Amino acid sequence: MAEFKLVISDPKEKKAYQVELKSPDADRLFGKRIGDSINGEIINTPGFEFKVTGGSDKQGFPMRADVMGTRRIRVLLSQGPGIKIKRKGERRRKSIRGNQISDDVSQINLKVIKHGKKPLGVALGKEEEATEEKPEEKKEEKPTEEKSGEKPTEEKSEEKPTEEKAAEKKEESTKEEKPVEEKSEEKKEDKPEEKK
Image 1 (cartoon, rainbow, N blue to C red):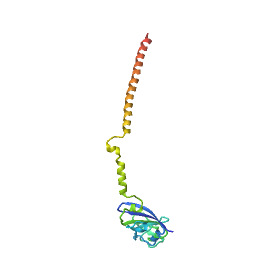
Image 2 (tube, one colour; image 1 turned 45 degrees about the vertical axis):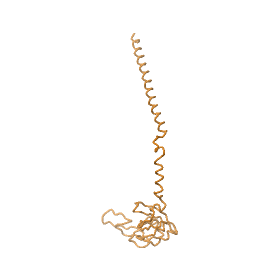
Image 3 (cartoon, rainbow, N blue to C red; image 1 turned 60 degrees about the horizontal axis):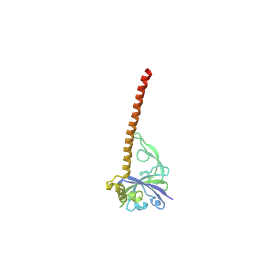
Image 4 (cartoon, rainbow, N blue to C red; image 1 turned 90 degrees about the vertical axis):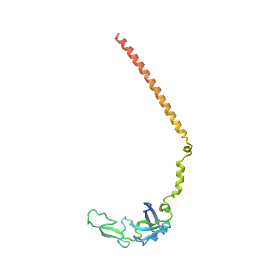
């Protein structure tokens, strides 16, 4: 039983989507090669057409377009997928997978070459249509209280306590100042008595 993870990139939207494809739909991809086109009906996206751009097998080795067949092979590479060159003229022997899709492949990279009527995200069921979201956003942005020009009652109630608190602080500060003055007068009176 075949099972593939499809990574579909859409150059128009500049987004990529992941889709899991299982048998019997996955069986229709056997024998396709890098560069071949695939009808969108395989992934339940009628009207779309995709191009196979690459992939990797179950162990993570990448597929290469210049290696024919389904086998994994060690090849002397100087550029392209499966190798990172650090010095000019460097070549390395690396294991890579052939360009044909087989049961050993786990991930297939696809690119949209023909678009359908709906956007790709909507067709795959990953996103909702934009027309449904717009009316809901407008309702949330404009509550009925703002239209009438009245402020909510909560804001008015919040303003009153702040004014009352300010008045209470002023009264407390004046009460605290008076006892300090009385104490200073008492100390002055005590000092002449000590001198006598």
